Length: 337
Image (tube, rainbow, N blue to C red; front, side, top):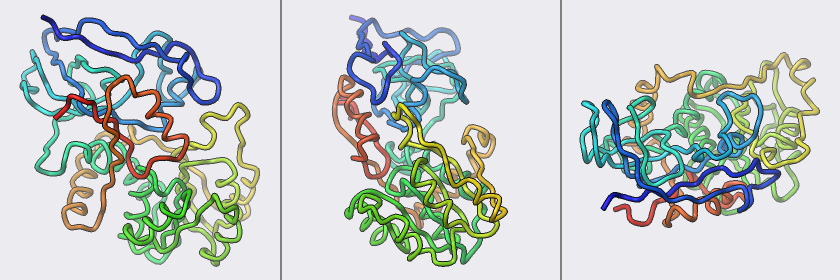
C-alpha cells in the first residue's frame, strides 16, 4: 500500500487573520522521487511570521503562494526514498518542504543535519534561518559596538531572543521589548538582557527614556507600527535601525507606517531592510559561530514545540499573531519519533 500524503493548500487570500475558509486540507498519494530527487517524511514544521506575508498577493521578495498551492513552510524530515547521490535513506534534512507530510526535493535549498551538534528542533531555530537572520541582521546591518545600546522588539520571539544574546556577547547594553511579565523576566533572568520592557503596560515611551537615557544606537525591529515610532523618538546620532519584520502589521487592514521617520534625518541615522537569503554563501560561517557559542553555553536556544498532527497547522500558526509563543514556534508532527 502506497503512503498517503496530507497537505494544507491556500484556498483564498486572507483579510486580517487567516480563517478556516482560507485553507484547504487535502489527502492524496505521496509523491515519488524522480532521478536526482529524494522524498522526505516531515517530522517538524517551522511556523514563522513571514508566512502571513507569503499568503498575500503583490510584489515581495518571493512570489506569493498561489491559490491552490501547498502552503510554503520550512521543515525537517527523514529521507524515506532516494534517487539522489548525496541524500541517503534515513538522513535527516531541513528545507522549504511545505505544510505537508511528504515532500520531494532535488536538494536545492536543502541541508543535511548533524544532530550531534544539537537536537533537530534547534536546526529550525538557533542553527536555522532564525539564528542566521539574527546573526546577519545584527552584525552586518546593525554593526553594534561595545558599550552601545541595542534595543530589540519582539525580543521573546525566535529571532529577537537570539539578537539580544548576540548583542550581549558583543559587549552592548541590551534592552528587549516583549509582551507580558513572564517573557520580560525570561529575557533578563535567563538570557542576560540588561532590561526588558513590557509593551502591554502602555508605558513604552517612558520606559525607553528610563532604560536608554543616552539614546538607542541600534534598533532591531521585528514588529513595526507604534513600537517603531516610539523607538525612532529615542535614536542616537548615527543610529542603525534594522528592519527585519513588522508582525504587528501583517494582519492589519490599514497598516500603520512610521510617522517619526524624520528623526533619521535629524540624527543622521539609517533604516535598512535585509533578507537572510542574501547571505546564503556565508551560512556555514554563521552556523559554525552560533554552534560554538551554543556549545560554550554563551547562547541559549528555546524552541516552543507544539506536539500535534498536520491538521492543527492553521491553528498553531495563529499563536504567532496572538503573541502566545516564547522562542521558536515549531509543530512536531504526531507520529514522528
